[in-house]
Amino acid sequence: MKKRVCITALLFLNLYVALGQTDYTPSKENLENRAWFQDAKFGLFIHWGVYSTLGDGEWVMNTQKIKTDRYELLPDFFNPQQFDAEAWVKLAKAAGMKYITITTKHHDGFAMYDSKVSDYNIVDDTPYGKDIFRMLEEACKKEGIKLFAYYSQLDWHHPDYYPRGKTGQDLGRPESGNWQDYITYQNAQIKELAENYDIAGFWFDGYWDQNDLKKAGKPYQDFDLEATYKIIHGVNSGLLIGNNHHLAPIAGEDFQMFEKDLPGKNTAGFSEGSQIGNLPLETCETINHSWGFNLQDGNHKSFNELIQYLVKAAGNNANFLLNVGPMPNGKIQQEHQDLLLQMGSWLQENGESIYDTRGGMFQGTDYVSTEKDQTTYLHVLNSDLNTLSIPFAKKRVKTLSWFDDGKPVKYKLKKNILTIYLDEAHRDAVDTIIKLTLK
Ligand code: FHN
Image (cartoon, protein in one colour):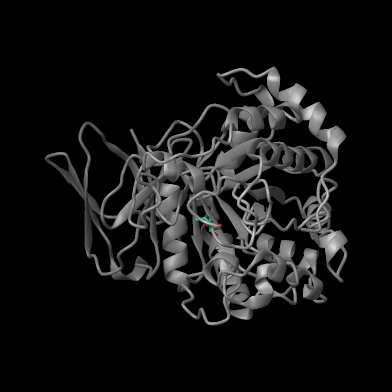
């Protein structure tokens, strides 16, 4: 184990944690940032790390049971000479995305930023030696894109992540360690990220590694989230915190994410315990079947699938955080760049019906709605329909018009059912949008 931990930061931190509180009142700035987040609607998720060199996804250390001392060879040949932070940020912007969330540390424990708490990081431990997180921070500032730090609480590398959770067994670490020292280490990294980088917030992951043991009635370790959240809001109360713990929101959190599912749905199996809270919502999804770069994964989603996912997320009052896994040379594979640019062109045309909206009151099998001010945008997601029937009790139509040319839409209102005639000329293969205002 090559890594050193700086002691003084740790002592200061223990003091900080002791002054804890249980409930959480978001600051005015935090509430403003939450509103910005909800207006933003679309972000780029990036899983990138030394695991990308093996082209077998971000879980390769655990799936291939790579011992820690073997895995520690990977940084020595992580050298992304074609990494261009501006190109990534410009791509996200051209895709119509308003923020980027990137893995500053994934489960393998390797820091993709210039950590002062551990030299198991991209600056001190790779031939590349540059702080890609800093480079992205600067490019984001230039392009008006916000930056979030994904941080894994689960750590398959740190000797003190002990007792182990449901993952990371038999990776060559000694069967010993001090959990509190790991928490102090984790909080020191989180604090340096909050203090040293101009970020919009944190996207935590890995809590389930211990919590699923708790759910199974087995011995587990507690991450003491409240203490960590207090450290972050102590540095900057405006920072937005989300935790992919697959549970209902916990005090101190500012947004709630759903993995590979729309809020409240559980088709992917991650959202069993996560009731929808009253926080801003986000759904994250892969552009193919992998988060980290996977050489063999050609299961790229189609443009239609991706736009309809974005629209359904907006119809469910949630953001869409779409993931790419860049290659070890620092480039995002061409198929994914093309798909993102196509989405950007669609948003150029139809962004009014997505950005700054909230989930609308009308939703059915083939349609969702978004609303902003007095306008509701109906999104018809099945282009085979000739008519659309919507329950419309106690409502009266003021105007009903096609989004693309503003012309009036034929409809009839009978027995509290609004029947809309979807004439072929206006139907769109991906999303037929109709503007509705009510009397
Ligand atoms: O294990 C991680 C996985 O690698 C990836 O980061 C996703 C992103 O939502 N979250 C975890 C699986 O729940």
